[in-house]
Amino acid sequence: MEDNDEDVMNTMRGIDEALGTGSGQRGAVAAISNPCDAYNKIRDLLPTLIALAGRIPVVGKRIAAALTLLQMIGDQFCPKPA
Image (cartoon, rainbow, N blue to C red; front, side, top):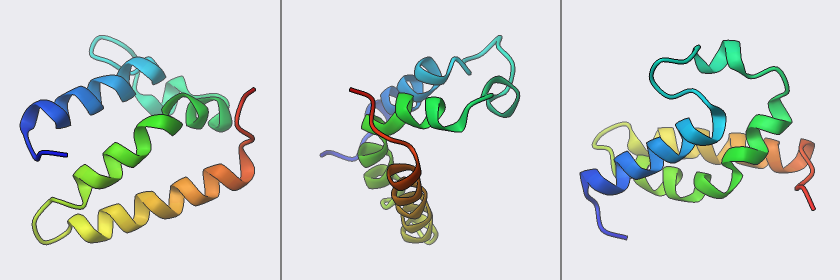
């Protein structure tokens, strides 16, 4: 995967669309009443987000590790929809 702004923006737009947290809408915390529903909406975007986070200078590896941990927790507690 190439490291460019378009990849980052497309990933972030995908998360906003999946969660319904794009501009003009309530914040993500207020809009998410069921964490597993929210997780399942972004499950497929997480690998890309983790890879992009890992490329951030200085703190990227730590952010990617934290996102990977959250992904592991989400996968364990939120069953994948059929």
